[in-house]
Amino acid sequence: MSAGVEPLRHLGRLRLVSVGLNAVIGGGIFVLPAEVTRLAGPASLAAYLVAGCVVVGLGLTLGRLAAQFDSSGGPYAYVQSAFGSFAGFQVGWLFCLARLTALANLLNGAALYLAALVPALAGSWARSALIVGSAAVIVLINAAGIRQTSGAANTFAILKVAPLLVVGAAGLFLMQPERLAPEAVAPDAFLRSVLLLLFAFTGFETLTVPAEEALRPRSDLPIALLLTIGSVCGIYVLVHAAALGGLPSLASEKAPLASLSGALFGESGRIGMTLVAAVSMVGCSLLSLFGATRLLYAMSAAGEIPSFLGALDPKRRTPVVASLLTGGLGAVLAILGGYAFLAAVSSGLRLLMYVACCLACLGRAASDPGRGRAVPMLALGSILILLTALERREVVFGMIGIGAGLGLYLAARHGRRGSMTRREAV
Image 1 (cartoon, rainbow, N blue to C red):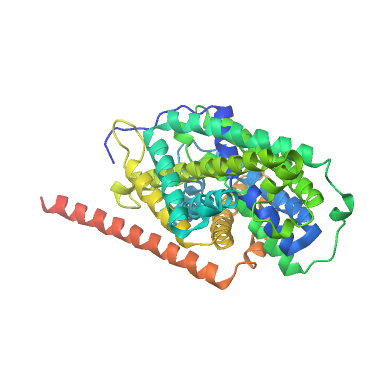
Image 2: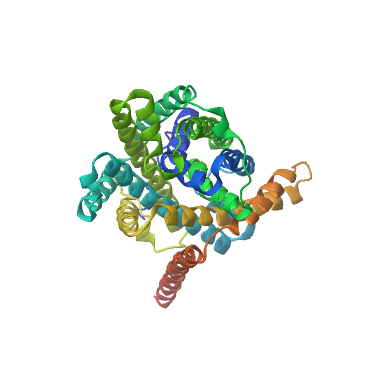
């Protein structure tokens, strides 16, 4: 890392909310309404409500922790303070893996939506070119600087939120209430649907990571978290209710919101929503890249991974190498992986990270009797239940990623010992 180079403080409360909205609203709401309806039928609306309750509890837990820290790192910093450097590293690496798989999934989803509009883009070479091109754009923006990333986040937030509100509100006029009537659903299918929805609902933790780029991190981050989560829950429930009540074949739709928009506004509406979805997913992938690279910076600054992985460019004051590596790996995973698989892996990794954050919050509550413990305990219990919905191959893939992180940690530790030995010899 370049000596003396520090992040630029630029993010106020509203900019943090725009970062949060972009980090959360991406591919999930555009693709998952069909998948969760296939799993849970009309009960999918209840799955949204359950997922919303879980993330509210997680947001309150992270907000308590964020109010006590000025340093960058988010969950990484919180767990490191509570349980030491190795536990902090594990959580930091889980965060990076979750953002990497989310980045890949979002690039995948953007290509999926565009292929639904232009079937010729569904071919392997055309799809790969779309993914690589989108990855190159977000890498360039992220490497350019925090002002450029923040400005792009604001633009993407407006471009995605406004159309979702319009389509969700207008879609209520197509709704047939009998399609919302609850039906019996297998518990494992319902649990799996909630797990997949957490991919759509989470990502808000990203806005806690760049605390050193926030103007007033201790006061602004907790409020920005709750504003982000509340806005997302309202938008998602509105949009899914409209799609569930308005589309008779929602479970089989490849681009459900484009189909809903087409039913409302004709072919121009379908085309417009397809483009909005693609832009939304690319915007969200930018924030996934942003969060992962800023955490790689924090871990390299602590000497927990090889320093070049998170080094700041002296001119741009951004982790350029981390941007290139993360963006490249994300593109490869997007080309090779399937949407539901990557969504489940990303959700599972985030849930493990949230477990550690809940334990850190409970640890602080134990040392301060004035702090309540009910919220983090309820959040922790919900997470442990949801983890049982992961499939074996998803667990194996996640473990491979965790093992790679452990290798980097040991390499950095070996490098530090080697440097100390050379200094002592001199």
